[in-house]
Length: 125
Picture (tube, helix red, strand yellow):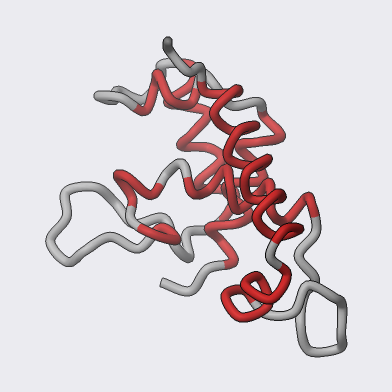
């Protein structure tokens, strides 16, 4: 059975949401409080989905977009959102050559590309 990218994103987001609802004490210790406060951002379905989308990049670009020193693959953490969107759309339309990114980006909508770009822009390198 072949898993297509949109299905895989949905699966990852669903599993993440299920884990957080089934184990609130684990979620609180691993990711901070799941309720809003003045000092913590709440984990919402939207933020979990955004993190799940970004996690699909980790195999090549490292956890949270941080690659190991000397990697041929660029890190994504801290890149400006507009730059990442431009590059991903260039991969998607074929105007930027790639080995696998042109195939990967075809599975993302423009909204998903923007969400992933915003996520990595918010991460400190």
